[in-house]
Length: 133
Image 1 (cartoon, helix red, strand yellow):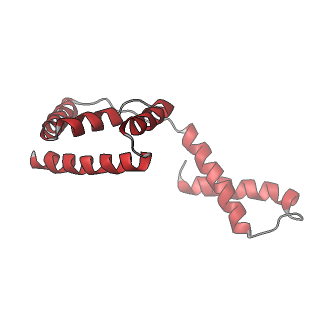
Image 2 (tube, helix red, strand yellow):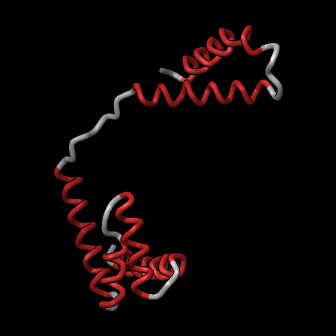
Image 3 (cartoon, rainbow, N blue to C red):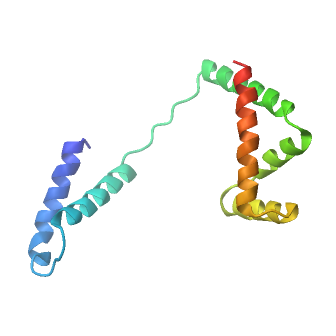
């Protein structure tokens, strides 16, 4: 859908619902419109299939170059920092969260302190990564 279609659908839904809520609704009517508009938008997002493009050779080559630059940047870090940052980014979802909590406990750090340390290591990585351009 186009934005105009989404707006039309929102107005249509509010108009249909208006007789039911007119007597009991309290508050700014714009907020009700915003809520319906958000739902219409989210429904539209679910309906539209996400297009996936197959990587071309140049994209594959670009990825290979990025991996080489990342390997170089990681090699410039101290071994302890390299192992920490690689360990920090392991896992997915809830497992990743639990792993990071365990890592912080193992190091005797709070989770925020661990995040700060990772942030500083990533800053170093960015510096080394940019050196390879």
